[in-house]
Length: 466
Image (tube, rainbow, N blue to C red; front, side):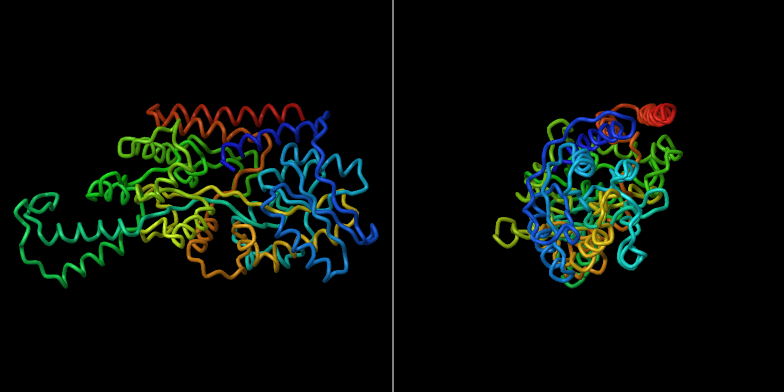
C-alpha cells in the first residue's frame, strides 16, 4: 500500500476511536464468515487480520499451533475499512469474539483505550531485547506496558547500482592518475595514450569503490558532481511525495510522542537541527530535479530496474523485486542495499518505521490461549514469515543469509516508530505537505513553527474535552 493511503487510513481510524471513546459509532462492514469450529467453544480462538497476503502464513500457523496445543484456531480475514470498529462490534455483539488480531502499531493507543488490547501476559519470555530490537519493543509499548507482540516491520533503505559505482570509482582513479594539475583533476584532452601504472590504477580504483557507498548526503552530491554517467542515467531520484521516503532527513530531531510515541507532552518540531536538516533537503532540489506532484515509488523503482538511476530509496518489498529481476535477467547490473546516509557529518539521519503487531483482545474469554498463539506467531513460527509473505520478521532470532534483509534489519533497529497518540493521527499528512512545500522552495522556519503550534493545539483541544 502506498504510504499516503496508509496515512489516510490511520486518520480514519483515529476518528473511529474517538467515536468509541466519546460516544457514537457506525456499523462496520462484515468480515468473511469463518468456518464452523469442530472443537468446543472452550478450546476455540478466533484470529482476525486484514492483509490477504498473510493468509497462507496464518492458516499454516493456526494448524501447527492447533495440533500442538489441541485447540482450534480460526483465522478471519476482515476488511481494513473500520477494522477496529468491526472488532469492537464483534466483541460486544457476537459469540465469536476476536481473541487476538493483527494491528499496525500506531493504532495501539486507540485499541488499548477502547479495551480492545491489553497488556500482554508474555512475562518477558518473547518480548525482550534478546528477540526484538528496541524499535520493535518501543512500537508495541504504551504508557510503559507491552500491549502487543511485534510481528513484521516496514522501513526505508538506500538501493544503489553497484556497477555504476564501480564505473565512478574507475573514473576518479583514472582522473587522479592522469591529472594535469587542474583543480578538479580532469585529465587533459590529449591524455589518451599516456602510460599508467595499471597496478596502482587498480589499487586506487579499489580504494574509491570501497568508499563509494555514501555515508552522508554530501557523498551522494560528490558522486553527482564527479560521475560521467552514461546518457539517460541520473544519480538519484526517489519518491519525494511520500513521507516514508523523506522522514529520515528529520527523524533524529523532529520528535512527537517520545521514543515510544505515546507521550503527548513531547512535541519537538521547530528546533534548529530540524530546520538545518530541512534546509539540506530543500537544497537537493537544485541537484535532483524531481516533480513532487508526478513522481511515485513505482516509477522510480521502474527507472532503477531500467538502469536509469545510481541511487534510490526503497522499502522491504524491493528486496524480492530486485532478486526476481536479477534471476530472470531483466536487470543486468550489480546492485546493493545500504542503510540511509546521514544528512551531514554533524546532522544524523533516522528512518521512520511501522511495525505490524499481534494484540490480545481485552474482551476475549480465552486470553491465555490468545497470548500463547500470539507468542507462537511472532516467535518460533516467524522463521517462515518472509518466505510465505515477503514481509520482514521483527524477531531477531529468525536466521537469514539474505544480505538485503540484514540491511533492512539494521535500519529498523535504529528507526523511529510512528507515534500512537490519537490526536496526532493527521500529523503525517501535515508533515507530507510541509515536505512538499519545502521541496518547492518555501521558507523552512515558519513552516515548522506553524506545524508545531498546530500539533500542540490539537493535543490541547483534545485534552480539554476529555
